[in-house]
Image (tube, rainbow, N blue to C red; front, top):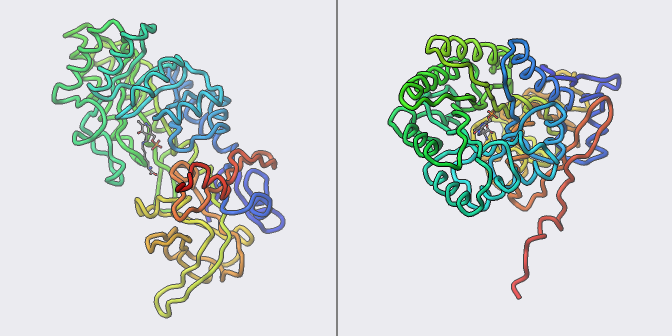
Amino acid sequence: MHFYGTTGVNKKGHLEIGGADAVDLAETFGTPLYVYDVALIRERAQGFKQAFEEQNVKAQVAYASKAFSAVAMVQLAEEEGLSLDVVSGGELFTALTAGFPREKIHFHGNNKSREELEMAIDSGIGCIVVDNFYEIELLKSISMEKQPNEMNVLLRVTPGIEAHTHDYILTGQEDSKFGFDLQNGQAEKALMEVLDSPYFNVQGLHCHIGSQIFETTGFLLAAQKIVEKLAEWKNKFGFEAQVLNLGGGFGIRYTKEDEPIPPSQYVSEIIKEVKSLNEQYSLAMPEIWIEPGRSLVGDAGITLYKTGSSKDVPGIRRYLAVDGGMSDNIRPALYQAKYEAVLANKPLAKADDTVSIAGKCCESGDMLIWDLPLPNPEDEDILAVFCTGAYGYSMANNYNRLPRPAVVFVENGTAALVVKRETYDDLLRLDLPLK
Ligand code: LLP
């Protein structure tokens, strides 16, 4: 069994996370329960930051809050000196409510509404990552009305890179809904528009080539295409980028089939490439910004479930159902994502059975793990599914009117509830009667 961060087995023979007994956590806070190992999030954040510091490169490491946005999480990101990437009015509101430093907030999105952009401008956030021509027009029109200070913007470009990952999470390729195409002249046209307008301070370029990427090649290629273009633009317009944002997407280990490289390696290879490209084209070294989401919080999250009914299909398989499913983790249904799990009440017991973990939603596709080796399960075991910290809670939903689980942060043996469990009343909060 592979344990992450502070996760291990305690004297009682139970799974322990951040010094807290997972079985006790399940009892105290109920199940399903998302549990975060705070020390591991801190370690990951420091890993990225130190890799830049060691090489004396000006940088911002922005937490992509779409991976898991909640007030306490945003506050933890602030404690660790991260910047913050938000992608909607809701994520921005969370960040503002959490008191996150506004100048370190970056706003993304391929269809930001006028209201969202006004909110971003009114609250004075650090930078808007402009995605398309429609947005440029919206920003101009808002600026004409409000006459705010010059807005810091990055232009999001698609460099034409295909990262090796699941098709649905490819974003840097030419045929993408995101950003200005770097090769066909769109990016250049966008640059001219924003440079010509008095409302924008163009800090540089942004790209994001995909998610759960295990190689550095894609990042290096993207950097290469962008710096080549920047060299061209310096000659043509005298434009020099102060910032090169290479997005997120650094892969993590969900199962033994995944072999990620350490964050420091992504960073050092990216720095090396950007330095050498800038020397080659005689450009000043820009600040490098990155936006990890999954790799900051993914393996720090564990979901605890209570096991319930089981069903044998003789000669085929045994289904074991838990008290959650695609409502708290839609990734297996959406991406065929794979996970590892143990019984938190006996993580070291011999796995002499094989079961398939079913969710409780009315949908055959609601399966969390196929063919999981487990000790013979008994009534009401606690199943701990590893690596659910990214895109678990943030993609949770109320299908079948299941209330969303609570979220607990554990550190040094102390557990803090950071998101309450939804109640049935919460589910009906917005409903109005027929008459
Ligand atoms: N920056 C931008 C502009 C992004 O679009 C994303 C993710 C990130 C950063 C962070 O990427 P990360 O480091 O977390 O890979 N729901 C999918 C992942 C979608 C990612 C969307 N964009 C999943 O569960 O795998």
